[in-house]
Image (cartoon, rainbow, N blue to C red):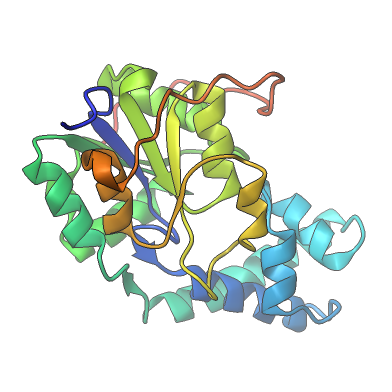
Length: 248
């Protein structure tokens, strides 16, 4: 029997549906080199990865960076990332996972911390817009995903207890917990953004494929998520999503 409570997946984009984790890592390594910062490795990136990005850069540098240093890192990162991204593709089993979920008569949407005006062309070029009831990137500055997720669910009239976030980062899990939504975390292996031990403390299921995530939700023999994640005991988000016009 299928789990009657989970009817909607909120997919993450970067590192989940879109296989650009290595592009993100390599662009960060390039940025630190170009800005004459201490050299960093892939292991450093995975060990220190966190949100918001300025705090991540501080951790990698081992000190609090100046605003000018943060700006130069951001600019250098974007230059390298756009170059690496040209070779990035959808995660191998992304379409199969979304197709299976749709075939089970369930709904799904896409939520990303990537700027909305940059996200939409990428999703459209990938040819997967038809899978989603809604696609939301960010508008303006938003350091954490939780308020973004809350607005995303509210705009679709989705009760948190009927939704699950499938993402690849600690921020995805923390956003889900803050909003009272279930979560599955995808770890892609050696090119993942986080060291796997980062996920151990979160006490959420971890899968190694997106089809495996869907199996967790549809097939009770493959595992059940159990009750929804409880709300966080203490606030982990500063600020709220500002009112915005309806987006595609």
